[in-house]
Length: 342
Image (cartoon, rainbow, N blue to C red; front, top):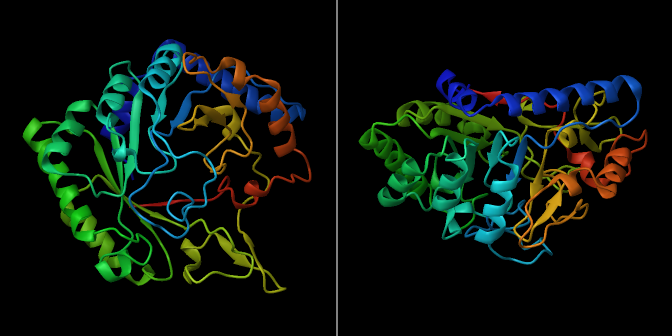
């Protein structure tokens, strides 16, 4: 599990205004549940920002790596980013600087992190670990980043590269060691380092080994994650056999479906949103190709309120909450699924 110190770091960033905003979001979600009408008070407390949708790896189930994205490949501009932070910092409590792509390909990623943390926004990012050199790790610690997720999907190069195509396990593990050393050198406890191990059929036998490796590396947490697979209805070669780590269940007819609690109404629209590198505000991380945009921010604009409370957002949420939700991406949504931490 995430450490108490990491929770403490998040609480340090909270203000009365942020707490009040979070309360309004949760209260309006609760009232929406019991009334059946869409009520949305407050503004997004959580935001995922895509620094870039470019990536150095070719992961087969990732639209950035398998060239499935139809969106333009680019970097988020500094003007757009700073305006966004400046105009939303009073109620934004949690920032994830990642979506599609590898964040550390962005030449200003360390400046972006620092700009958010200096405005009292808890900031996290995720990486494939190929750029964690000693120098970069010192910059990362100095940026004030509170949490870093490093993807390690195998304990041998053979199993690792079956999904992280083009990646080096040795480089990623050395990167984690570099970051732990940088934290000690700077005498800091942040960022919290989390190894994320996506459990595939190709690596599920290595779960005991990744647990041992995480302890040896002295990371803050290990997250075992079930894989999201695009074409899962008829099974998939990457689908794990261990039911604990398989989000899909086989029906009597032989096809697979997402094994989750369908009584859980989507609450992502009350919590946050995602901003793509080309300034489109979208509902959540499952809209990888921005097919359901709330709208697009202009280069000099940063206020999310008009898009967050706009007609496109209302229309999308009403559709998601409808009895027969037709939106395809929702069929793969993890709302209602449990996750495994160590």
